[in-house]
Length: 337
Image (cartoon, rainbow, N blue to C red; front, side):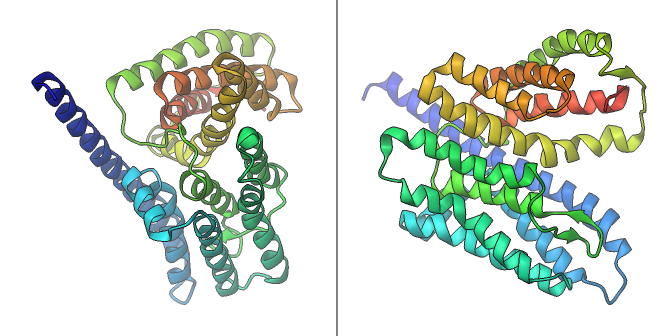
């Protein structure tokens, strides 16, 4: 190996190490921000001294810790190494999530019968599908899409029994359970290359994020105002400026980008090429916003913008930044149905 090659190899190693450290730092910061906002200022003050403080806190730590922890590539590699073979990897994660969800339901006084049945079927159906069709390498993309739909459809049509956080009428974290289950399947259980779930960004990534946002806004804003879907109604507050973007990123943008770009667009591009895969994923994303056709058109255009960022950066976390910017600015300055 010549000197120039050695220098290049060392530089790449340092860059990779820096990126991995960046992943850990970013995940830790987001976890801290979420903990302060959700637990310290929102949830725990509303629980009396005899309430479910420990079960609520433990559920938050497990779900949000897993959600953000899976963004760290070193963590994913260690989990895969620890769990061993593919069958164990596919089944152990859903098993743990099922125990966590049911334990929380039991300590919160929620009805157990429907939750045991529905959550067991929901959490184990996608990995079971992958296990059954694992040998069909030629149609792996189609089976991956089917598994993704098994995660998405029950959430889209609100079929999962609620897990109020905190009980009895708090935010329903069944969606977060679903997100963690999907992340686990495609990052650990059946690792899908090219998802790009990394919270480490470079300036080039951020430039592409900003470019996509500006171009989309220049097209979608006048179009939305013209067709009457958008209306100019600024509503700026401190919470809207500081808290809302973090909530949008974690609860809406990142999960949707994981599904529509990291899984769907990723697999479609392998199956029918980059341009067609991007276009089909964008159209699916738009159709998911039915029944308002105006919303479908604007969401499809947004799907092209987010898909372009994902294609250029290889990171769903980057496309999620564009997604967050759109939703955030729209919420601050505009109103829509």
